[in-house]
Image 1 (cartoon, rainbow, N blue to C red):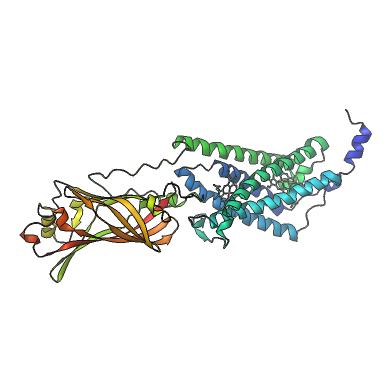
Image 2 (image 1 turned 90 degrees about the horizontal axis):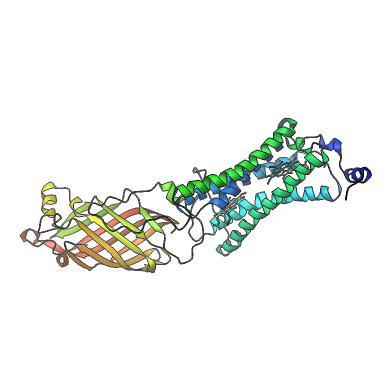
Length: 426
Ligand code: HEM
Ligand code: HEM
C-alpha cells in the first residue's frame, strides 16, 4: 500500500516546520545530554552490578550516579518551568505521543532514583550512603515494609525507562529520516543536528560499552557466581591481624535484603586490642597480644549461624617488661615454642540482650582444648561495627602458670578485646 502525495501531505500537515527550527535553550540542551549519558551508564551499571565482591563497590557508584541524576533532573525541571520551551512541532496523535513520552521520561528520571533511595533506606542492613564518597547522604524515613515494593518498582521503572527511550529515539529517527523537518536540531548543541546525532550515538555506546566493560572485568576477576569470599581459614602458625580489604570496598555492599541466609563475613580492622589481666595479691599484671587474627561469619540478627575463629600468636604477648615477657614464654606459662598458637572457635552464639551476645566455643591452648565462653557487645550499625568483649580463662585448666613463680597469681586470667569490623554480605 503506497501513500499518494496528497495523503502524505495531509498527514504531514500536523507538522509545523517553522517550530522545528526553534531550539531549546543551551542549558536545556546541556542537561538533556548530560542526563541521557548518565542514564545510559546508570542502567548498564544497574543490570551489570554483579553479586560478587567487586560488585559491592559498584553499588556505591550506582548510588552516587543515581542521586546525581535526580539532582540534575530537578534542576532541569526547575529550568523547564521557568524557561519556555520552543513550541510543539506536531499536533494530533503523534504530537500527543511525543509529549506523553517526554512526561513519562521525567517520571522515570525522578522515580528511578527515588525508588533506589527507598531500597537502601529500608534495607535490613543499613549501609550508609556517601555521595561520591564525600557527603553523607541520609536515609529516607520510610517504613521497612516498602522494601520489596521499592525493589520491584525500581526494576520495573528501569525497563519502562528503556521502553520510553526506544519510543523517544524512534520518534527522533522518524523526524530525521521520514519527515525530514530537522527536529533533531532543536536538541543539538549550537543547533547542530549532526552533533545531536553524535551525542545520541555516544549514549548508545555508553550503554553497551559500560555493560560489556563491567561484565568482562567481572569475568577477569573470577566470574559472577557466589561470592569469592574464602571460607574461614584455619588458624595459621604465624597469624597477622587479618589482611584488611580497602574499607571503601567492603563497606560498599549490596543493599539486598538477605533473609536468614548465610551470615555476613566481617573483616577485623587494624587498631584492635586483645589484652589480658591477671591478679597477684592486691596487684595485677596487665598485658596484651600484638599479633592475633580472626575470621568472623556472623549475622547480628541470627547469631545461631555464627562461625567465629580467633587465632593468637602466643609469642606476641607482652606485659611491658622484658624479663617477665621472657618468663611468660617459658614452659611454666605459655610454652610458646611447643605450641605457638592459641585458637578459639565458636560452637554456639546466643543473644543475651540488645547488641549483647554470649559465644560458647573451644579454646586450644598449650596442647589442651577446653570449652571456653566469652561475651561481647556490638555498637555502630549496618556493616561497620565496634566489638568489645571479655572472657575469663581458668589458667590451671590449660596448665598455664605451674611453677613457684606462678604461686601468687590468681586462678583466672581476664581477657578483653576491642576492635572494629567491617562486614560484607555473603
Ligand atoms: C536514574 C536512576 C537509576 C537507574 C536508571 C537505576 C537502575 C537500576 C537497575 C537497572 C538496576 C538493576 C535492577 C535489577 O535487575 O534488579 C538497579 C538496581 C539497584 N539500584 Fe538503581 N538505578 C537508579 C538509581 C538508584 C539510586 C539513586 C539508588 C540508591 C540510592 C539505587 C539503588 C539500587 C539498588 C540498591 C539496586 C539493587 C536492587 C536489587 O538488588 O534488587 N539506584 N538500579
Ligand atoms: C539518545 C538519543 C536521544 C535523542 C536523539 C534525543 C532527541 C531529543 C529531541 C530531538 C528532543 C526535542 C523534542 C521536541 O522538541 O519535540 C528531545 C527532547 C527530550 N528528550 Fe531526548 N533524546 C535522546 C535521549 C534522551 C534520553 C535518554 C532521555 C531521558 C531519559 C531524553 C529525554 C527527553 C525529554 C524529557 C525531552 C523533552 C524535553 C522538554 O520538553 O522538557 N532524551 N530529545
